[in-house]
Image (cartoon, rainbow, N blue to C red; front, top):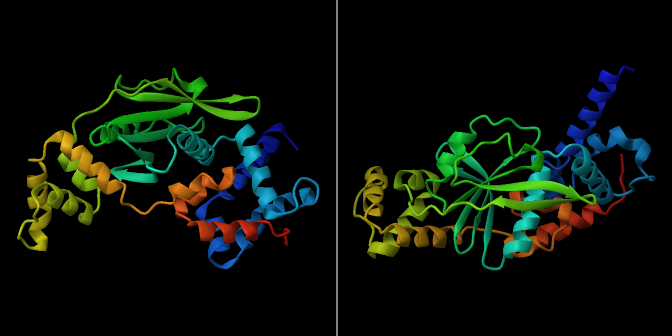
Length: 290
């Protein structure tokens, strides 16, 4: 077998490890104890069963360790970022949301605590396509916007001075995130962008909270009328009301810190409750059966 074929096969296997953490692979286990998709991926490594891993949980730990060392995909970055946000800010009064739509962009992760932060991840496997547009969009409604990159890529990404930079590095086999540059606080919220980024009930709540009333108009007019009213809200107050609404969103953040480190990103994206997680983790501790 040629070196090129060996390299291809290795990348193929690593991509399979990455896909093992997808909602498509893991949600069926949560919902009905269906391991069929995960079993297809484990079958590639059947010679390692009983040697490197015996249970589904051990397989996922093995797969994540391989990704962390050899193929730092978005899942690895997100998982590391979640662990970092939990340790730095805690989760009792903070909300972490996976993939938050901002206009035509989607922030990889956002954090609401005493302020609002957006994080855009660019792994070593990514290109910088659309990055300028994405960061510009985030800066229109979030107080702070960050790009998360590997430390070796810091000179590749030239971003505006207001954008914070967080770098990922490996130390003694563990991944570490470091704030290389703090974001400059944005004190202006673009109402048009905010209206396009939050739910109908949320912008109605913001309007009602400030004006103590909702406009008496039909459904066809409510959006534009609420937008016009929201422009009258002082910026500082608008940001406070935006934060208050986001903190109402359903979240498993309080329990997330107790979940297995390798699975935090999946659990966040699937918004697993503690009861769901306990069933899921119990199932993962079953012996592999393929």
